[in-house]
Length: 419
Image 1 (spheres, rainbow, N blue to C red):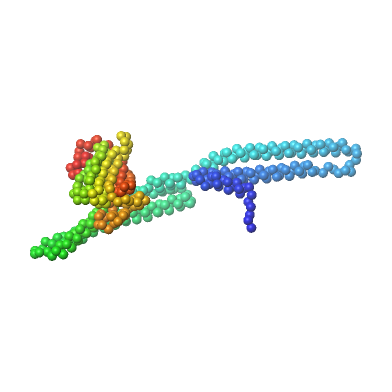
Image 2 (image 1 turned 180 degrees about the vertical axis):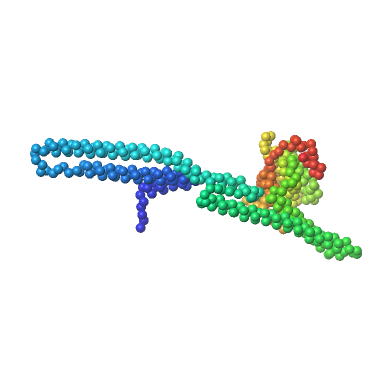
């Protein structure tokens, strides 16, 4: 059997549609409070109207004393009827005034209830706002922080304590992961060094070395070098995520890019690549780790070379975003196969490659752009990967800009970068 709830149900549904489905929780609580107040006030007015109308009918139907009164009492009865009629009219007038006054009072209180409901909802939701602000400040580099919400042991404090417990578990998990990667990268280098030395000893023995042995040794050395680069990438990635910067200083981003490009001249020539005109802005200075920023430039240039078409091209540009802007950009573009833009963002994830030429070729470890993404994020920058319409990839790294004039006269002896 279907039950019909009538106008109050429709009014509540209207309030839900108008106020409860959109807006903040504070707005929804206020709308709910005002709706309930109006419903209860309307119900009180309806009860008052029913009671008033019942009393008026009782006054109007009062007995007139019957018809068997003496004739001499006709005038007295007429006077009584007149007084009763006046009394009924006064009662009706008073009832209408009460109802009108109540309606006006209900309207005034409805307006007041909006402000009162907004204030009460704000007070109730204040701990949640504090929790939200504290949670937003906590990142992967500050998991040691806690909400530490005080107050009575209610549902809000239970929620805050649960979030603090979750942060504690996340901190332990992150620390364990970083420690494992760092320790594994260090410990595995010892057997790699031993195996490489064993190969060298085997090839250095007196007498002719069989051609098959020399070929196998060369292949093994290449694989060991690949594993060594992979472990080094793991170590850099772990340190970056842990925020271990021990060599922070000011650096010319353009000089880092040119150094990376110059150091790979042989690889560029071997693949027949053309280096297009480079646009380097000398005012593009950044603050950060020298080792990590150099690794960013090396990785993006290596990626542009390794996944390029033979006879293709590379373009490197460094620019400051406007005279007064607070950012600089390193843009590395290259030719190559046409890539799917919907999957290009996956290249910033570890061991992600696209296309047949980016898989199974032994080129790189699949960590190059993921390391770039981690270092860029650690330096409060952004990484943007875009597939070029005619093939190839455009890598844009944007970092906060710093003033390099104070250190422009002190070049780094190893890289030539002013510090």
